[in-house]
Length: 110
Image (cartoon, rainbow, N blue to C red):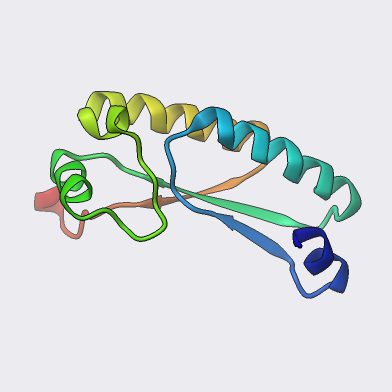
C-alpha cells in the first residue's frame, strides 16, 4: 500500500512513531531506503522520547495509543536512554530527521 500511495505523488514524507524495537526499526528503515531510491525527495521523520522517570511511569500506567515500548525500555531512565540513543543512531544512518517528544514544559522540569 505504501508503494501505491507514493506512486500517486501525494505523499512527500513519512513519520515514524516512537518505539523501542531497534531491530525492527532497522528493517523498516532498510525498506524505506529502497523506496527512497525510487522516490529521492521522500522525507523521513522519526520521533523519540526524552526519557524521564515521570514519563516512564506515566507510560507504564497509561501507554499512548499506537506506541509500543518494551518492558526493558520502561524499566529505567538509563535503559530507555540507551535504547533512545540506538534509535537515534539508526535514524542518523538512514537520514531520518528526529523529532524529540518531551513532557518538559518549563525550566523547573528540565
